[in-house]
Amino acid sequence: MNRKHEITYARAIFCLIIVAVHILSNYLRDIELQDHNRMVVLTFQILILFATPCFIILSESLISMVYKDKLPKNFLVKRFKYIMIPYFSIGTFYVYTKYKVDGNEETFWQLFKENLLIGNWYGWFVVVIFQFYILHLIFHKALSKANPVVMLVISFVISLAHSYLMYDNDAYTNWWNEFYPLFHRTNILYWLFYFVFGYYLGRYYNEVLTFVEKKFMWLVGSLAAVTLLVIYSIYQNDVTVVQSNRYDILLYSSLAFIFILVISKKLSKFNISFLYFIGEISFFIYLTHKIMVYYMAKYTFHFIDQFFMYNIATYIFALSLSVGLAVVLSFLPLSRFIIGRNSINSMIRGNYRVE
Image (cartoon, rainbow, N blue to C red):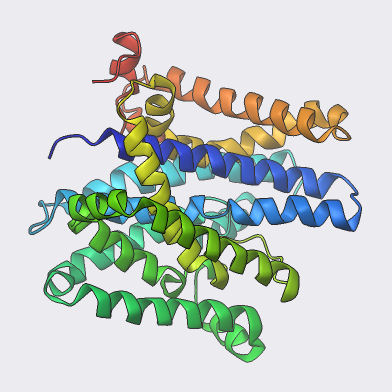
């Protein structure tokens, strides 16, 4: 398969948006705002939550695009090496920081079990992605023969019902909390629609993208309409939880994914080294940026009363630290087991040329 630069660009865009989501969380936590101003910031933050589902969708789309009919040997082993080993490597540092810096009363091993083993930290999305790989291994043949529309509708109903009940029904929520052994946001029922959507998008990638490019204004109109529905849900139904497994962003995130993909394809006509570079190390940035935000916010806190100054400064410094660390680590042996699979070392040696 020819390398599709728009996918790397899209991955970079999703990554950059997620950094913004977490910086806004820091801002809202650390400052007292009037109710109106807080709701404006919160609404914007919720509207950019689509980036995490999109990143997860992309993981399945790439697999179904590259391996349409047959999976390679040791499929799960290779994926474990490049996403779960970084998950545990960086996660262990996160737990150590929580244990030492925060002065937590629990032991390191208790924190390790409560956070890493069950996925109860901001790296929980990796557990979801690995579940996607398992689902793909089990169901890709059946999905290839099934009717895509039927499977999309069924999976959408399942994910919507589960997400809504987990938000609105205490008995349902309590049952899952009692019997589900991992962090609740890793429950595959939240993400089943995204898995099926990603599978068929990857399998019919060229056909879907060609169709959407021809109907681009219809996509824009649909996305605008669904955006208004999300805003309605925030204000009228008072659904203000800042979590990417919200029931009201299922369709919104899927349309946003296609929209960003189309925009990225247009951008791929240009050699934007910055986006390509960020896309190549996006997985590492996902896993490290919140640690960087935690430390940088202590220094940028002086600007907390200045919305743009605080958030932009924290954003630039936190992102720069994650990128800088990735560059340094890329020169070390076996760095892929920390950064994830990437080609940044060859990019650096090639003066940041995109090939």
